[in-house]
Image 1 (cartoon, rainbow, N blue to C red):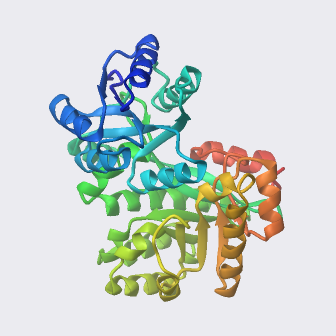
Image 2 (image 1 turned 90 degrees about the vertical axis):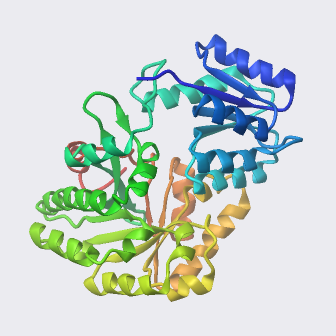
Length: 395
């Protein structure tokens, strides 16, 4: 276990001193500080990576976005708290950029810094790392990730997906958590970069697919339709054995491909070579569904969308989170639903957290939703209890 290390990046000397003092009072003493992005990069290269950067976006020297791009490429920052006076629409765009760069975005705080807001953000972060007030998991090594796969420490977690019209659970998204034997549970942001660097996506996917299909088989044993959605990395489209892996798993569990949906991030669509379209078509011919994940935050064109054989659109949670406060988000959702109907595609809304969001999405005609309003991701045993403890209807 390792104590949290911080960087405070703020060009205003007084506000920087306040942030450092707040962290010291909270018991965090490994705090680096810098006045601009270039200074921060030099400091981190000399002193080592930090767990969390409290980062201003607008500075006289290198701004926060440029700093985070460089720090992310060098692996010098794991998570970010934005200290910002940006207009709300600009701050939301910054949030999306950071998520696309695979940063763990913990939250945004308006200036002047409110110590209570910062402590709440850090408490949530600590809770995800096992609840120790002074500890965090060190970024795992390549060898540790390989050993974790060999030991089958990567567990499938499930977030239910609900038909909004019928208020009925129709399936679940399969997510991954790493349950390490001697430490806490790690979320994907902690280890997926290592998985990608070591070319282990295929092995991880096969393991999660096997766990997920086993769960699907159990649920369907109660005469209940239940589909699975698994996240899919664009690099896997070039894997020559992908189709055989999926076919073999379906045969072992005696399940149909029609109950399996593979999700591909919209941001990766521009990277898909034309040769990989053949793999996507073969997956559809096999009977699998293909879903565009985080739709609305990437850079894909409508022409690219038309070319690819998707049959589902998954709206980014940011649109749902902001739809009640910002009419423009409701407009985007409405137009996406119209587009989907024209293309004969289903729409899944991520991030539903309130009755008001659910009501609005239902009125707009959204097909399926998921989010904390219904349930957080859970292990297989808890999913069975959740499903059959509640019965077929959700409410």
